[in-house]
Amino acid sequence: MISGKLQADMPAVTFNPGPGDFVAFVNNNTITASGTGNACNVTVDDRATSSVDNLVCFFEWLPNTSGFTANGFNLTGIPNAAGELKLPYKISYFSGSERQKVEVVNGEYTVNALVPVKPTITGLKSSMNGVVQDGYTLKSYLKDEAIRNVTVSVEPRNYVQYISIGSGSACEVAIGGNGCTIDVGSIKVSDSDLLMGSREITVTANSKNNYFAPPEAQKLTLTWDYRPPVVDHTLWNFTDEAKTISIGGQEIYTGARTVAVAVKVPQEETEGEWWLPTAMTLTMNPDGVFKPTTKVTLEDGTVIDFKQSWATPLRRTLQPVSGPQKVGDEYLYIFDLTDLTNGSYAASFTVENNSKNTSTYNEPESKLMLSDNPTLMVLKDGAALAKRAPVYFLNEIIVAAFQGQAGVADIKAVTIDNKLVELTPTNHKGIYYLPVGDDLEVNADHEITVIAENLYGKIVHLILLSRINQQDSRLKTLRKTSHCTHEFGSIPIS
Image (tube, rainbow, N blue to C red; front, side, top):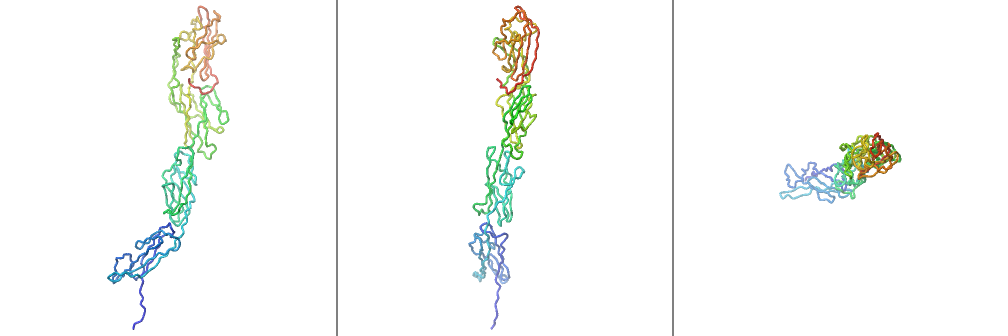
């Protein structure tokens, strides 16, 4: 009789749970089994056969209710519950020629699935044109400015966090990480034609499988202010004297032949300098409203040639000679018109601020530049009255003030011996006949004074000393002087 103990080695396996925690509902984990010991060679191939030198055991994961799926030695899945999870398995071998399956090990691998903690966004940094703004409000002052990327800071978590902005762009935060940067390409701050406004886009944080409903969300408020400085009023001074413009509650002197421009800024006293007005231009474009002529034909057929010459005006873009000068709550710019060619122009101002936001102001009325004196003539028989030319009838004499177009210059007064006389008008404003003069003493000298003025107050005097008698009239002297009055204003062209 033989007595003793029979001891057999049992097959064994070890398990590798892989990196990271088991976090319920969010983490995708893979557990890998592998055989150990000398009892048998553990395989997952159910077609493997044993031999004398190679005893083969068959390993298999058994079905579970914890959300894991088997694939050979691997068991992969997202835990569907928190707490202790038992994952069953067994080891068998195949006996005899019939390959009868004999179970030798039935076990469980236990994991502890943690309760997931919802993501928390802790900060945002947005980049536009290379400038980074920190916070949940993004301010834009450059028109058509676009967001290039957004860096999202989060609290670290034991699962991969998925960060998205708007409806498309996203980035991932690795396990234990605290943020990532989303390249959004080009999201314009403004989504409308409004010069000022705001809108919101949503930044969300979730697990990669979007478990949390609703996800962690923060609003990124996009604000924009593209309002440009604007022309409030202008003062055109085509005269040779200074004028004053009312601006910012003050009266400011401006020089002769200038235009003064008062500009208002809608963001006055806002922080920073992005809103301050900077460059301004004045474009003077010939508009053809003023059509100068040199000859006039009266109703009686008399032709008067004023022998004036007019250069063709060209389009000019002028820069201010001063400004912007802050006056009260407005800004003053001054343009010099001295070298502007005589003629009429459509005037247009363009002003911008430090953010390159611009506005354009078009003057509603044509602007007429007249740098010369009006022409003043005393004529007889359509020609200038010459020295010692005979004058038999005073009402044959024409006095004419003209500057390119009817109405630009006019006769202001005619006196004979310092007595104002009433003139007889013609079909052209500025051209008149002298009266009959029956009351004048014959065979005596009489002083005739003619005063003409144009739209901008330029005055011309003409003084003639004549002897009028029944047979002859001798022009004794001829003298001409001129000066300007002190008048201002924008002069419409009629």
